Image (cartoon, rainbow over all chains, first blue to last red; front, side):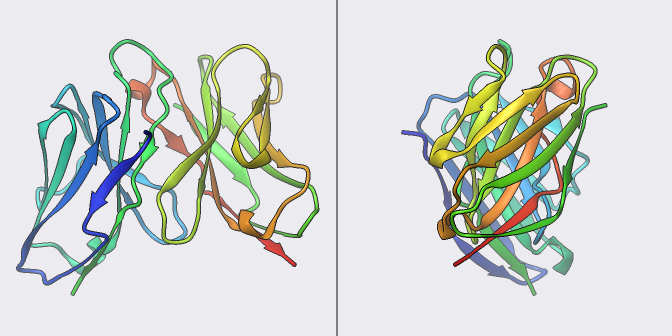
Length: 116
Length: 115
């Protein structure tokens, strides 16, 4: 099973709302990633978790708050977003990043976020 | 720093034709190279990867790519494309020693296959 699931599929939120995106994998992977993707552009890395610890934060604004409750789950909490944050948010996972690579990343289908 | 250049942001071919999508990379150490495909309104799916060993790599859906160290290239090809191959294709590079194994993506090539 090489599936990464993401919920919800679509999300519309106002600038004062608080919402969360959820990602789940059951492949035993110990690294999980959040990406933001604008139309016709490659994914941009936001956060990396390795062994449930935040290892990379690509200078993402604090209105995005990641959380890794356990090795299978990754959340992205959203608060006070701006219209320019509208994008496709992709989650990915890969094997242990510590022991060497290359460990290809498996992507979920994404959450299409619209901020009004 | 690593970088990836994909030549041609849009490629259009007829069904049954050979398609070649170009990717050049820069890396100061031996790279790991990947091709991903993204169908409309979906996430990215791994087509194939190069790590070490044989330079011709075969992937899913009839795609293959050849690693050329001297030309720092990793071009993707398919001998006979199908309409269902219409999608965005991303080349990506990583290595363990730089940037913690992060994936560095090219800008993507949109492939349109016409009947």
